[in-house]
Length: 396
Image 1: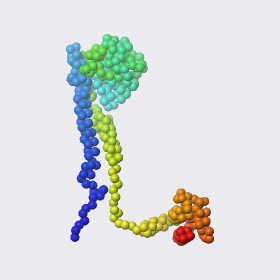
Image 2: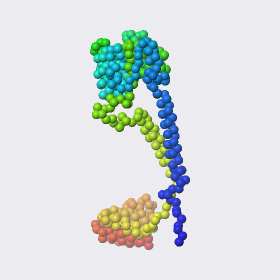
Image 3: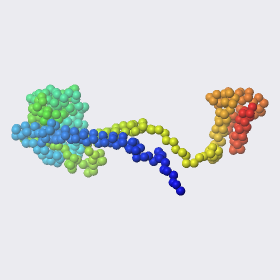
Image 4: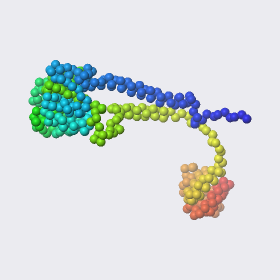
């Protein structure tokens, strides 16, 4: 007995079809992976050591540390809130490189240690997430468009430095003793507020550009930086770290979002765009229709009987009668010379039938457009009458 050869259908694609359909998605994923690696390499190279006084990168701050060392100001890098809090004192300047990266717990702890220590606290690019806790009485405003600004104040450090690249975050305060410098659109980008002891102060700088190695020699950046950071013999440079135990929430647990690396939103956006483009590219390639043979052949009479049983089970005599009458009217219209569009109009069909059957005693109005039958027997009788009417028209 010879077996039948297997037939290839749309449910069993060949290896060539699988490759043709999947190569586009594979190519898109490869390009996305290469682009991600390239972007990561560029960003990791450009951001390495940002604001780190040990880094000689363009965005590092090694030049600031070396110039301060020449003026007998020591620079020490710390990475935890506890270290920064312990170092606060009257002979120390605490520089916070990323205030907005601190949690509420870290901000409160740092503020408690520095507010009455008699030293100086410098906040770089502090925004709304941090300024309310680290500098009470100050509100953060939208950043300025200008980057290089004039001092415009009586603060000695700013007057000696002159123009500087402090343009960035702007601040607003109602404290009269505050020094507001480098004003942009009515609000300062450098704000100095003395503490309650009168010996220490907090300095907010709108942008960290004045500390970068490649920007230090522009305008009066070097002069302003050295004066603000060199007012005490010791400088504690606080670079927040994810390994800091104080960075945990008050409950001691980190949320899922806290555990996701920075930049995940951009990665998710890139993946979404790539997925949409791949779907559009593959979605338009519908290809030709595939014809398949039905596994069994169903006779028309069985289909009619099956549909009739469904109508009977649902007790849908009205729907069944409407279907029978509509089909009959559609078949009668061409027999009496009416177009298909007028087959369901009683004002056109009934006169045409009456002229075709002048001797008929059938009530055409009730038969073709009458009310639905009241029971199954009436429905069967209606079907018989419709068949008889159609035969009579055909033979007339």
